[in-house]
Structure formats: C-alpha cells, structure tokens
Image (cartoon, rainbow over all chains, first blue to last red; front, side):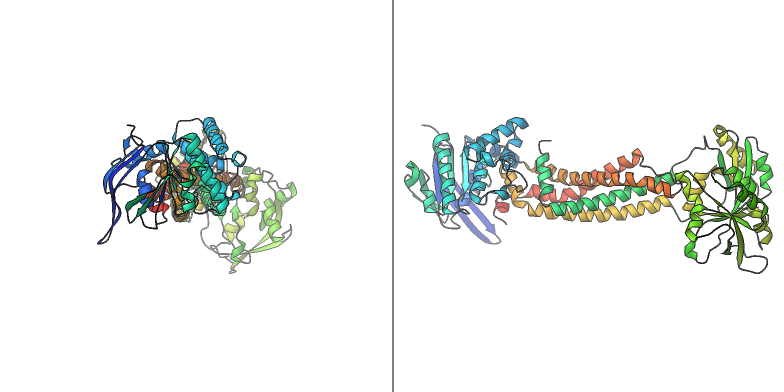
Length: 235
Length: 386
C-alpha cells in the first residue's frame, strides 16, 4: 500500500492562556493521499486553520505525529522547517499577501530566491507560472494595479512556482466576489487535476468546497464527518 | 545581489517617507563631510617645505607681542630675504557688527612681501608718504562705499590714542585688488602705518604682533624657521615660525578646540540621526509584519530575514550618506574660497572612509532592533494579525 502524502496520528493542539487551557485539536487522525483535493470546513474556532498550519509546518502539535511528504515534521527545528516548507509546500492566503512594491513577476519569483537558480531561470520559471494562471500579460503590474481575483492568481502562481508537492489554501476565495472566486477555484481544481498537485483548502463556503474531491468537517477540534467527493469534483 | 530587489522594494514601499529620511541622512552626512574637512584642516600637521613666506609670532600666545627690535636679528638669519612686521589693531568701524581685520604694518616691506596686493603705484607712494594713510582691499571698500580720499575713523578697543580720543583717524590713500580668486578674502582688511600707530598709542610701544618673513629658498623654509626660533630660545620672548596657513588656523583655534567642537556637533547630529532613522525603520517593519510573515512562510529563514532588514537600513544609510558626502564635496571649494584659501578644506580619503564606516555602523544599529523583531516573528500570529 502506498503511504499517504499527509499522515496525522493522535494530533492534539492545546493553547494555554493564563490558567485557561484551550484544546483546539483533539487527537486528530488523518490521511491525505497524494493528488487529493481536500476541503476543510467548520465554524470559526473549530481548529481548521490550526490543522492546516500544522500540516504546512507553520505550527507544531502539542502531541501526536505528523508525517508530510515522507518526513516527520513535528520535531523539526525552525530552520529545518523553513527549508522543508520552501521545498514542499505552496501557500495561498485569503488576503493574497503579495509584496506591494514588487511587480507580479517579482512576487512570483520570491520562493525561487531561496534556490540556486540563476536570475534568468528564475524569470523563466515565474513567467511559466504566471502563464499557467492566465496572467502572462500582467507580469510587470504591481499588485495595486490588479483586481482581487488577479492578485489571488498571482499568489497561486507564487505558490506553485517552486513546484511544491502540497498546496495549502486558507480561505482562498474569502475576499473575492463570486465570479473571481469561481475563477480561482477552477484554477485550483485544474492544478489538482492536470498537474497532480495535492491540495488542502480551508473554507467557510460550501460552494467552494464543492470544487474539492472530498470534504472534512471539524467541530471543536474534532473531525466529525467525512464527506464523499465534492459535487464539483467532476467539473 | 539576488535580494537587492527585495531591499529596494522595502525602501520604495513608502516613497515619501523614504525620500524624507534620505534627505535627513544626506543633510547629516553633508554636515559631517564639511565639518570633518574643517577638522582635518585645523588639525593636520603641515610641512613648511616649499613655502616662501613664514610668520614669526610669540611662542606663548597670539596675543603676546614681540619686540620690534627682533626685526634686525631675524633679517640676519641665513636664508632670510626680507622681513616686515604687523600688529593687530582691533578697531571698530561704527558698529561691532562691521568687523574686519585692521592691521598696523611696516608699509614698504609689507607690500614688498605681498606682491599679490595689486595697488596702483601712485597709491603705493601715497601710502609710503602719508603718516595717517591707510589702504583697504576692494571688497572692503565696496562694502562700505569708501573711496580714496575718505577719512575713516576706527574706534579703539585695545589701544587708546595718546591725544585722549577713543578713536583713530585714517586717510584712505589706496585700494588694492587681488586677482587670485582663492585669495580674495584679503581684500576684506584695512592696513595702516605702524609708525603712526606706535607713536600714537599709550601702551605697548616698540612691540609688534608678528613678523612676516620671506625666505630665499622655499625648500629651506623648514631650516630657516628652526634657525629663527633658535635665535630667541630661552629669551623672554620666544618665537615660533610657521606657515601663514598655520598662523591663520591658530587664530581660529582661539575660539576653542576645533576638533572637540566638531566631534561634539557630529555626535549630536548622529545621535539624532539614529533616533530618526531608527524610528523610520521600526515603523516600516511594523507595517510589514504580514509581508515578513509571508516570507517566513515560504521558507525565508530567521537569519536571512535578520540580514535582509539590517541590509535594508544599511542600504538606506549608504544611499543618503553618499549623497550627503557628495554634497559636501561640491560645497567645500566654496568654503575654501571664502577662507581666501587659508583653510585648506578638502574631502580627504580618510573622511570618505570614516563616513562609510559611520553609514554601515548606523545602518546596523538602527536595523538591528526591527531585524530582531522580524526574526522572532511567529508566523501564525503575524498572519492572524496578532
């Protein structure tokens, strides 16, 4: 049997605020096979962003084991995690988080600065990524000169430019209108389907979740339901 | 180099703020460049080699006079070609604000020793034959609208007149010009006859302020200077022979330790600069917390972020600082001209190096606190806006 790309066993996360102990995640077990497109849903405070952050190596569990892309990441040092993230994970945020003073091209090149690629090759890779998200003609534009949907597509190009195994998306359509949101979701779906990228997407929006292959619900830190393939999985 | 666009992007994020900060840095370093050049001009040791004119004054102090009788002894020193003497009068024309040097000189020898004073022959003759005669530079004549034939009263501050008046009267018999632009400053003085002054004053008769000595061979100037000083060693009035420029510098040094004053001013300026730039960098990094969090998220390590933030502040200092030093470099010739070439203010390589070291040091000092903050950032908190 092939090992899943993401494997969580007994993962808990506890925050201590003064004397108060808040258990955000409770003994979560989860397998995500390579090539999956998983939507994580749940009410605010259910722990879905915490779970996403841990899978992406941004946060550490209080207990349990986390294996992602063949590596145990829960005990990695910060420097090792940074290297691991650069090599394995692409990030898409709700508010795009592009650097405003850089052009779309330069924003997309950012993860490649950490590689040994020459400037010319970095430019070429960024151009390919921008072309993939349909923004080749906007390469020289600053984020302020792009619409919200276009900015998010630039952010997606930045996430895929270093060809990571895993793409994590935290409310990628939360700040977009319906039309732009659908464009972005179709793009994510295409990256999953045509390019084999494994996707984990946190969303509040059931319509967005329909674009995923399957949906998991979290409530008070517990995985309570596993839905089948999203309605949009076949789109 | 690969991170340079990132550094530039950080600086260009708030263009107006960066421009204003750059201006402040440039102004501080322009001031540093000029003041350091002045400090070097005042403190650098000067060789007498190649100088044909020496000034001999009291070894003790500029205010200490020397016997006029030294003239003959100085003239007898081997290598001395001609000697003149001069004395600071310190008179005031109408108002203390109208300050200009007024000096009692041995007229013929003094003019002989200063061929750069272009005085018409008939005016020179009038100066040599008129006991109350005085000559002024063209710049001073223009300043007060004086013309040959005018009678100029100067209020006595150091030397009252024997006749009981507290002012002296001089007949303007000549106006000289100086053609060399860097010497134009000497056009702002009034020269009058020593014999008139010495006979009329109530104290200090037979003494002078300093001698002007022309040496026969400029290459021997150092040896001649030493020979003159040896003449008066262990006497009541010991002398020091030096270049005119050094003599001028010692005049300015009377206001205090120039090096210390310059250092104190620069310390205050740079302290203010550190506060200002530190505040700017701190504010800039605070505004960019989410961006820095994104960089960390995509794999930028803590140490790299620390280096990038420090490099950004250092780059800011380098751009502003080099701009400032360039401004000083452009301004210094004007200062040199204003001092009639006596203050040899130039940007020495050492000033550039010190300036560069200061830019880097201040860049690191102001960059380090926000860099440490960026380094310690917790990604999940920063992304969540906590």
